Length: 355
Ligand code: MRU
Image (tube, rainbow, N blue to C red):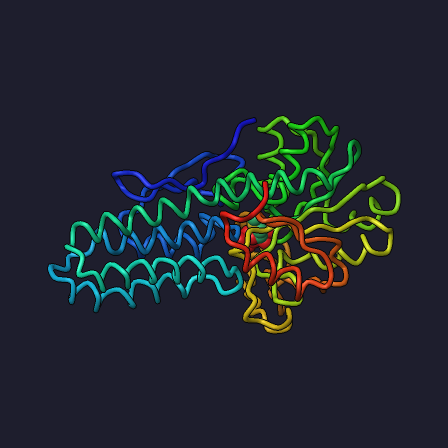
């Protein structure tokens, strides 16, 4: 099955597929400055929590690789500024901060070892590439665990885009669907368009269509109708941040789908890597929610569709843990009570994980 490549490290720089232009145009940009990578994350050239993490790791590596510093001390002085600019792009997806922390730990070890500058630069690039490679492996493991939870046949619903475009692997929620389909499940995907940024209509519909997975595109206000009448066998979504009690931040609109799934007895699954767990937060109330520009709501592709009035545009909402049937990660499947099951999976070493 065809898999989109949202980001690649190349000898020319960090190459990104511009997701703002899909599905109409397939355009790539090559970034040679970490500030450009930060701007690309902020402006949604790349989006989706795990892919944002990969971009952040590559941004840090690019900052180090292209730095004009001539000594370790100069580079050490520059490093926090590079991380700060990348950290100030999007607040909700915790993979961004996870990736920066990981790159910071690697940098600190190299500095402590008094590594020669060229070796340090090479090692930081290798670390960013390892983050990318690991995302591919974690998605595949998530797909295998999650496929067992999918119905053998029928319709499943998702929200936003948690596919290859959002993870730089095969996708989390869409990875689960993809693996299930490859294993022979006869699935059709109900894809809500996901206003205001239309990740469902523009990206998920494109990815599934390109991958040959049957889908039906619906508007967001059709979700209740299809839950009631449309034989939805399961919902599977991605996540931007999962608190210690299992409360999950994901694209705005996810919460109402979870409430409707609960009302209609439809299992509601979250698929996300361990890097999306934020066990430092006791509950979802502590998750920072990004507020985006009003013109994403008042305009469609540059055309005004609403008067100039007060607008709210929270990019994410939080689904309470009690509405989530299971959280699927690369190390297994967590169920209520999540405070215990998520901790157990987080503490499990990757090597010890089954599958
Ligand atoms: O604003 P976006 O497009 O970055 O939001 C993306 C989502 O909410 C995804 O569902 C989430 O990041 C999971 S991606 C595997």
